[in-house]
Amino acid sequence: MDIISDLMKQVATGDNLSQISKNVGGDEKGVQSALAMGLPMIMGAMSNTASKPGGADMITGMMGQLGGSSPMDNIGSFLGGSAAGAGSGMVSSLLGSQLAPIQNAISQKTGLPPAIVGKVLAIAAPMVIGYVGKMFAGQKMDQQGLTSLLGEQSKMAMQSSPEAADMAKQLMGAQKDTGGVTGIFK
Image (cartoon, rainbow, N blue to C red; front, side):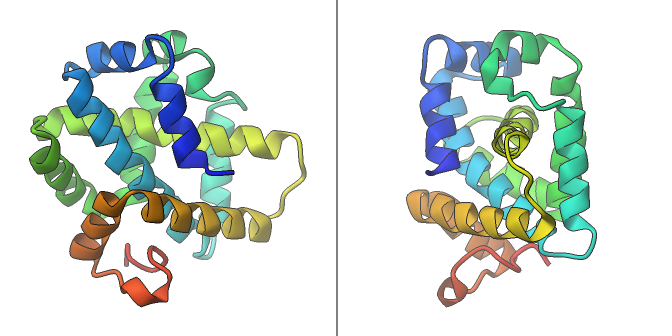
């Protein structure tokens, strides 16, 4: 099971992409590629956060903010609701000082202005967090389980998105041979 690929499929379903694009004010093609790069970066940041002391608690807290639902369950009500606003806080917590460089890098590749990329990332973070939260809802997973799930998913996401992997490498000096994303956000 590959969370990021599944999310990208959900984005492409029905009018989800057009709703997201209208919401952020970008063209659909640009928004879709921004998500294709942004989602793996967020997964990588979550994986990295979870592996630090207290990090898994922080992520569990973010899942709690979303109340066990995933934005993709009903993108329209998510975009119109308060949870969408929480997304920018989540992105800032996860990406920290890397947020601006990541925004700019995605902006250069997609042609979307950095401010719009920022809005896309603020939707992407709850998408990933909500998805993982829903997976957890049915099962009691401890922090170790969370950390290893995020690590595996992060590796998969980077493998399926060479662009995100390159970006991670350039921005955070990731070592390719250490399995990718862990430790790149230091």
